[in-house]
Image (tube, rainbow, N blue to C red; front, top):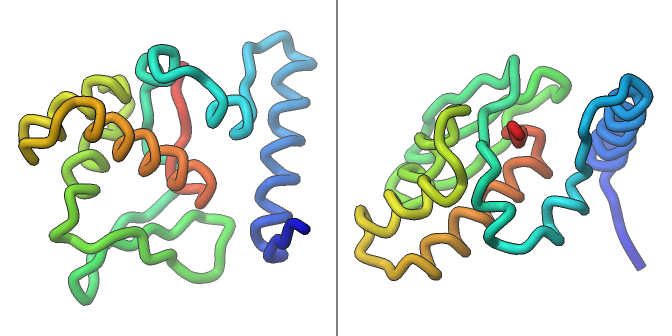
Length: 135
């Protein structure tokens, strides 16, 4: 059984509508399910960026994101987390693989661990409506 919040279901529905509209216009499109199933070498070549209109703030030791279509901000991760290093690289200029490599250097993790962490962070922020993939 799958459970969805109303907000999650609406967000998923709107994303699918946007994908369908883009496909009708002949644009290359991918759903979140597609991204989650991509092999690491392909996902590594995706460029994450913060979605337009999302407000990022810090409060009480955490990073918060507020998508324009949501009433309340979402607590994303602690400021002291390695997620902050990767997230700051989700700027529309770095590939997932580049953010992973920089995270590996900053944390001392091996590249495989760093990539898995960056990949998971990116996909979770896409689900939350905070980030988008740029192809």
